[in-house]
Image (cartoon, protein in one colour):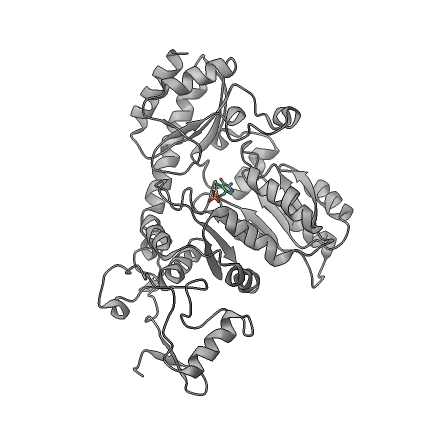
Length: 435
Ligand SMILES: *Cc1c(COP(=O)(O)O)cnc(C)c1O
């Protein structure tokens, strides 16, 4: 047992701990961009290696039997907060723990968890909270797989849902909450909604929840999928959300080379979700966690550049004669959506909708003429991507619902990357000419 070894109250040595991270210098609180280079990792524990090694192991050796027992009390939820040491790679690992510490830094979250995909994060969240007879309240539309999970999968287990449109007011949200039969286990939001970019008024949702449920002990938590704007341009925990959900595949990973998910929030809710993750094994693997640590070092650089690029590209597209409309958050003005944007967001992001004059023929001609932008679904990577929702991601959505969501044949979805903005504008200009 060395000085760095932490012991429990009875003196059982548990685990060598990293020395505490420095998060202030001369009284100055360090920003997340600075903390991404070292927070939560102590090189002394890894032979002085500047970067965390990838811990490729399925299981961990306990210092003694009593420590093993104590760790399992944490893993099984007998004691809250998870294991105090490393046990088995379905539960935790150094790469994932460092990643969780750093993810939480961006939004000053009490705790965080990482998952094998955005959908496994969302599925684990739902499974940890719902029971037969419950009614999930959610904003609409949602990411298609999330809608499938709520409607078709959880529906088979007796879980109901009610939804309200993304832009709903506090009164409208309250009315939906009062219609719910059975227990409401969770209020689930996605903002901006995919693919309409409609923003949800998180502050109004929190006010509606508090008005309807008061101080009830079982007040449903508010969870929100913040994949499109987080963590740089929208921080929902500051606006009344209890949990923030991510597809880390997108901006956080940022290089279109991995799939992962995350959930951030209060310790109490994270403990509930961690128990489910421990049971079903939806944690991300050590290699992916290591790649995400690398990605987080450039998160602010990448997102800032992509956001600036998108503003320039959208300004160009808006005035082009072959463009009908550009659905970009940075252009919102003088309406309820603009008001939500002003209160919740610090930037318009880099994913937007481009409505061309014409229909599918014009959209396809435009997409096929692009040279720099690649024709692929997904978003938030270093490279610019373009896709056709009506013919791709939303192909199986019924026509009436497509029309209601504004998913028309002339719609192209674009995610702007970190290339040179003028090069991108030149690419879009020649592709528009090719129509
Ligand atoms: C991509 C995405 C998801 C799903 O994430 P995966 O990592 O693909 O599982 C969920 N929500 C939103 C908004 C997304 O864009």
